Length: 257
Image (cartoon, rainbow, N blue to C red):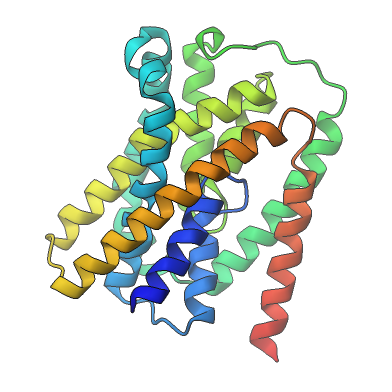
């Protein structure tokens, strides 16, 4: 991996982390296009630079998360299922799922179909919960369970939490913001666990690549968050579903030919 690879992957991470199209899936696809072997370091890089994207959320939302007990407690409850499942499945996911092109492409394709179908049946439904403070602890727990599904590369953490929230009757803009906030402990835990498991054994050049990816991911994520908050005011997620289907088919054809 060189600096250009780190910049490209950082941009992809920042843009896709909060959109319902799977940042991990896109980084795996991009690494393949760049002919990067999915070594343990590349896998760790793909996890670590998520912290850059999360920093953008921290800057935007830290006051609301830390200074509001109602918000903080709901984020904490939603984080529990992901923490438990992530800890139990970490070894299996990193060894067998991360870097697995078949898993990523199927997840993107099926997830895209699901998004389109879900939005069709969601049409005309009125939200019952319009603020994060109004989300019940039971609903928060269910959102966390939905998020845990995204441990499969290509599913998309944001898609899973947003769809779960919409299914529970939470307003679109509310669940999008809650998904942003829930990303903070989720990504911090994922990165921390990976760093502990790797023993912080990175060479000087690898550390430099991590730093470049982190900064680039932060900058691109900041603008991606602003875009999505604006987008959900007047749009559904159908276009993202269509995009997922299109890119999975396009990449499959690329691999074949």
